Image (cartoon, rainbow, N blue to C red; front, side, top):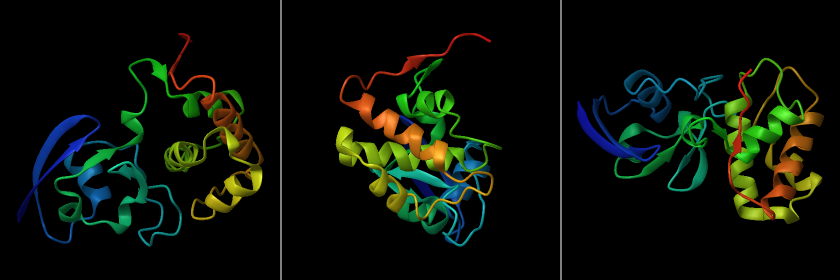
Length: 166
């Protein structure tokens, strides 16, 4: 067993892992952060996307020991309390989800995409960069629409949006 230590969603986390433990397993099983999903274990579907030192990565392709010393942000770490991240709000507003299984990975990919491209993001780029994220429920139209709306808003405000109690 190897001791790993990393900052996850702003908090220092440590744990003992086998050297072969994937980051996604450490997050889900070791830390109880089950928003990061496992869809394929082969780095094909994108359901496990997290941010590692500020960049989107598929956590099923990174060993937990490789992430030791790094900063990791999961889907649980992008909202501020009841305030949705702008990308989460856009997915909700534009119906960019169906069953929701791929949604955390799609959102984490979109946050990274918007951070790199900002309001200049266009539909072709969104579709190209979503290539490694699979949704089995939709034709991606509303996902793309949500990402473009969030990117457009990124120029105006990057502040989270308050969720109304339902």
